[in-house]
Image 1 (spheres, one colour):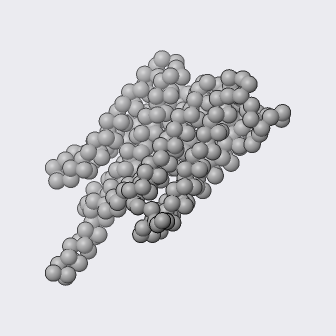
Image 2: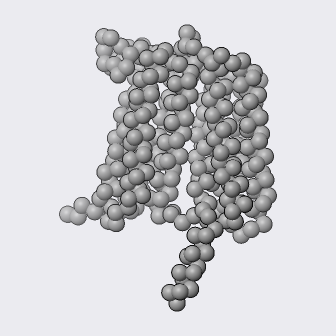
Image 3: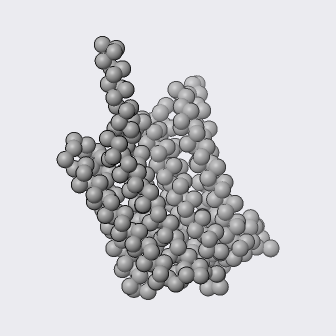
Length: 300
């Protein structure tokens, strides 16, 4: 029996790892939004009496999130191991998969810090931002595993604008975590909050979102007349998700931040960031296209 793994099968492994990375963001949000952040008061044990304890609602929610982290770890490790058995070995896939493993280990440690510091908001922010890094890396791994390694060449000005959109979108995500750190859903009623008024945090976040959306519209306007159909779609997806996300954000803010809308906001933030990473990854420097054309001419 051959021990080699086909690219198609490996692609399915990377998709499973990505799905698990997205789901853990949602389950982590459920822990906070149900007030279950200290449902397990210790780490890595649930509490002083039991390693695993699902005897209470809050404990069960927190414990299930921890157990699901184990599944995420297995899947990203599978992505690393399977990459070594591909029919054609791909070092780039191995490196990306190892990034996921290191990141998940970091999440486990950071999760312990969150619990042991009684849900410190800065630690919680780091927890979410690392999740976004993992989701973005997982998305790139899926694209590369699926054979999508070529990147669209654009003039340097357009490439810089795409990069600017990615940076601004990342800033919007970071300012969003500041709103969360100042807001009412801390994971426990006694958890500390950031020393900033939520109105101030929301304004800063809103300004960053408006600037980001404006830059996306500018980018779409510049690109629309050029024959880059796939890039048009990538930009439009980012814009649509950004507008929906902003709308949900404003609705939740003016309705006393209900937990259900916060959950939708977090899910949309994850989808938005994946779309931004997809846009960023889709674009490469113009010189690569010229080099490829020159090589093709020489080989004729």
